[in-house]
Image (cartoon, rainbow, N blue to C red; front, side, top):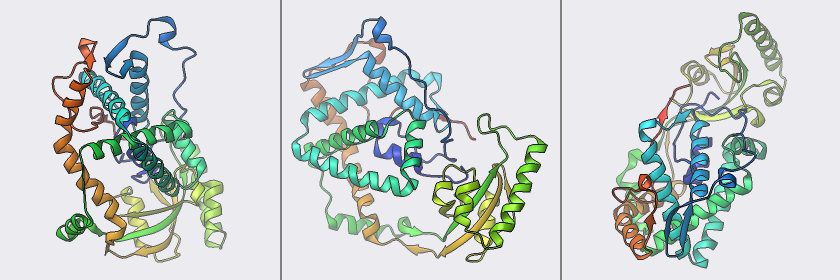
Amino acid sequence: MVKMTKTLALLLAAAPLLGGALFAADAADTNAPSPAKPMFKASDLFADTVVAKGKGLEIKRSQLDEALVNVKSTLASQNQTVPPEQMASFEQSVLNRLIQMQLLLAKATDADKAKAKDECAKRMAEIKTSIGSDENLNRHLKSVGLTLEQFQSKMIEESTAQNALERELKISVSNDDIKKFYDDNPSKFEQPEMVRASHILLSTQDPISKEDLSAEKKAAKRKLAEDLLKRARAGEDFAKLARDFSEDPGSKDNGGEYKFGRGQMVAEFETAAFSLKTNEISDIVTTKFGYHIIKLSEKIPAQKVDLAKVSTQIHEYLAGLQLRKLAPDYFTQIKKDAGVEILDERLKMKEEPSVMQNPAPASNEAK
């Protein structure tokens, strides 16, 4: 809620078809209801027309509509929308991605699929570690209208297609390539000073409208914050107090804990956290979100991140450079080989977009 979290970004990075938006300035409201599911689909009443076809490939309007809903739901969970003037190119991009996915999945080998399952398992472990609990994960997925099974299935499909593409294009990144990039770009791997701190938040915003509470309700929250501060300083378990009373859904199940550097929190919160001594508890800190009580657990000095911790990211980055160079011509060719036709004139793209391109960028409305 306070932190510029990577929670949804991590989910999106694991399954780019869901949206591709990165690093929202504030975490999505994970208490928001999931998108309403219609009692029936439009295809139940009208003919489900084919919008694209080719050899071994057919995409119906209902499939495109479902993908559009998924992406829009994900963007909405981050307070983002697609501007009306970009809607046509947005739909074209989503359709193009569906075509790319089907063509690549048709080329996938058993080895591509097995590798994808292993990658999915590793990413799920990373996501669960980042989010803190299965309950938090399910809440985040619900906010974008997905079940855990649907999310994992999409993630495996994405990874399978990516593996097939890298194999087809003979993408190769050696350990020497990774080491050279690491040595040549030291500034990219400097980890600034960070802190590990926990907080209890008593929100002064309405959970639905985000409007400020009345003065009377704020006074009641302030009184509760003062009582909790006394209990924390008297030695009660801070993590238990956070789980019992904090109104930050992004951290309460984890005892209120975050690890962060400068520039990742609202200014008042950051200033207070970095000024504390280890195991010290702050006074009540007021931000636009409400009243916070912060406890500092650890100060982590600036350091260079070990190569072993970033080698996977470097590999993906270098592979991505090769993909962006080779993929457009490759997709043009395999679409030609498959005789792909776009049957809806409004959905035809003028040129081949970059590799596995995410939908058009959305406007961002700050919270």
